[in-house]
Length: 440
Ligand code: EPZ
Image 1 (tube, helix red, strand yellow):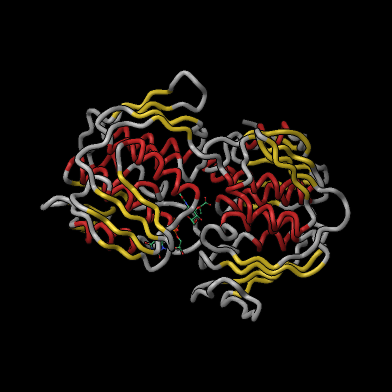
Image 2: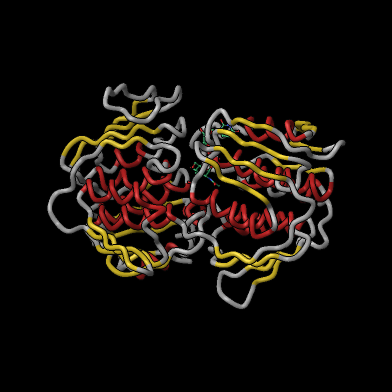
């Protein structure tokens, strides 16, 4: 047995309390933002996940001094000696994360140039960066595509621009925010993403001295300033991890208190959780999610940008829907290939049909997208143990839930991918009474 696999004896409800810390989809971006400051920054509530370690490595390569603070999850970032890293060193990080693309603006501001390695990230679609590069060009960057990544310069500096995104892309919105705050003049961003993690990044930039106004109708207005200082910020909680543990509680008939979870950022998920038959209680220090007994009910879900149902929430929830009495439908409108993980669930006894061209449904409320797909889940179907390999981050967590829900033993391999976004998930499974074999 290797430390990259776990054998789960399923059929036991998860019960107990776990804590979620800072959002995997905010903390690394906040670390990149520290590059923009003239003085050191402090980021708190940072989760111990591999995406953080990748970004820390890249920042260190560029001369940022990174030290751990006194409190757990506290990182100190001192960008005083930022210099250009050697391409070969940066290359070593190629394919490990999508975050490096967000180094463009900060490095162009600090060094006048940037080299970004080929990106990684979950295989849930093409994951293009055309919105990012188009925006950078509008700021005045010159982009050169190289065999191993992209090289950028800003011969005339970076100037504010009017940018309208073709789609409210989280990454492209972050790209514009991190570039515009020190650009000369004003930037107006239209059709911006407004996810809670985006608002948290705006709070960080505002603490640094940036002038950013979130206007109605997805418009963000940024007035460039001459310089920024460091920040002291506690990262927003990870709502995707919280929703994943909630789905595990539902699928296993359990009762899980997720410390650190907050209602406001999870409202759409909480509605669906209740409609499927789960119950929840909001406390000051977290949310209790439990299966109150009785059958789970089928639902129709359309994933969407915030405040819609988050695409990252659907994969863990699918396992609970395999236990619901009836037919559920999920319209995946954000990514064009996010149902690959369902093959393994069908191997375990689920009945999930994927429609690669999506499904027409007159009752739809979310704008239909060209590449969307749909999955139809018919339940309840008892799941039986199997050997399955983690395909991507959220699909991987759904495999843990499937193993916990199935009768018999399930061997889940390629666990490393789950460590990208779920801090100490093995320990948390132990805390919640899961029965498994794992050799670290
Ligand atoms: C972020 O990815 C998150 N990742 C994703 O979470 C999340 O699912 C996604 O936002 C949507 O909320 C991180 O923050 C690290 P996008 P990002 O740009 O920024 C298309 C997880 O499980 N697009 O909003 O890459 C793109 O193909 C991960 O934690 C372009 O076409 O997402 C997709 O269809 C998965 N061109 C859509 O926009 C571009 O230049 C949304 O992508 C950029 C994006």
